[in-house]
Amino acid sequence: MRIIVTGAAGRLGGWLLQVLKKRGHDVTGLDVVKAERVYQVDITDYDAAHKFVYANRPEVVIHPAAWTDVDGCARDPEQAIIVNGFGAQHMALAAAAVNAAVLYVSSNEVFDGTSTRPYYEYDITHPVNPYGYSKWVGERAVMSLNPRHYIVRTAWLFAHGGKNFIQAVLSAAQAGKPLRVVTNEVANPTYNDDLADAIAALIETGRFGLYHFVNEGACSRIQFARYFLDRAGFADTPITPITTQEWPRASTPPTYAALCNLAGRHIGITLRPWQEAVEAFLAKEGLLK
Ligand SMILES: NC(=O)c1ccc[n+]([C@@H]2O[C@H](COP(=O)([O-])OP(=O)(O)OC[C@H]3O[C@@H](n4cnc5c(N)ncnc54)[C@H](OP(=O)(O)O)[C@@H]3O)[C@@H](O)[C@H]2O)c1
Image 1: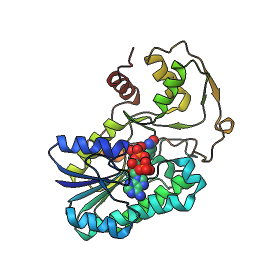
Image 2: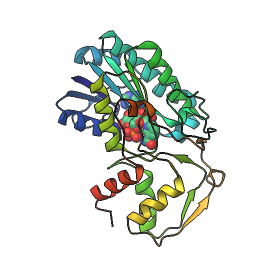
Image 3: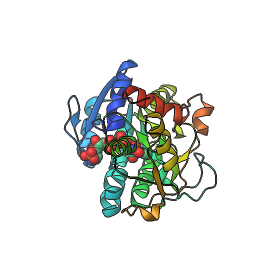
Image 4: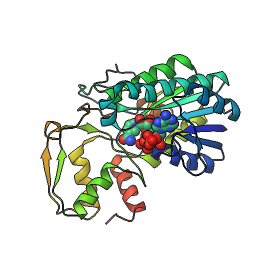
């Protein structure tokens, strides 16, 4: 298939470029950031987005590009809507104009975190912070403007080569710094590589709809940290449990934002348990003890 991937200088978009090429697709990447083999296009520019899509005539536009700095979004909620909402609108419209499908990568933060069980795909959304709201605007734009759409929500991504929670905590542990990790935030740690494989499999099915692609199982931030510290040889490193109230930040995350991958399972696309994914990640980084 001919595919455009947005956010191709980012963690998920960059890895998707490689995965899709390996599967034999003809892939072109764009990003606002300059990077090798990636075209520089700003998706908030409607004309530029359209021109790029017209020139490349894709069959699918995969759209992970986003302003992912959740605290930045909290400080500038309108800019969050412009990038994450209107950017998605532009890509959905441009794709529709050339009869292409669109896949929008969304977030578990479209939910408010008050559920007592993992969220199903069609549970009522109710974002509680500006980042979540902006991703929800993007979802609505894509759903209403291009009937041939996939919405893929994910959570707590960890990827090679970028900033992420695992690397931040392991670096602090290696430096002997005290670790304080929150107990009352729960979601699904999800390996970027597994998510990219699942997205590639999904677009090859043509089964449009709403999906929750996360590694199986959920845990609190502190359980996640304890697991990878133990596996990376830091079993003796203590962690002080704290609550989100003791970790002041601009954005308020939903407390219980675990997702259930019911729709993906129904069509045979599942991701392995998060613990196995963490071990695969550490092994590839040469950190698994
Ligand atoms: N990371 C997570 O834990 C997580 C959890 C749930 C959902 N998601 C979703 O998953 C997707 C991929 O996340 P990721 O971690 O791979 O993000 P990422 O590494 O931040 O990649 C996103 C890329 O999009 C670029 N971008 C921002 N504004 C743009 C614009 N106007 N035009 C074109 N490109 C633009 C970013 O550039 P800049 O670096 O300059 O902004 C970045 O290169 C996102 O849609 C995110 O909302 C992520």
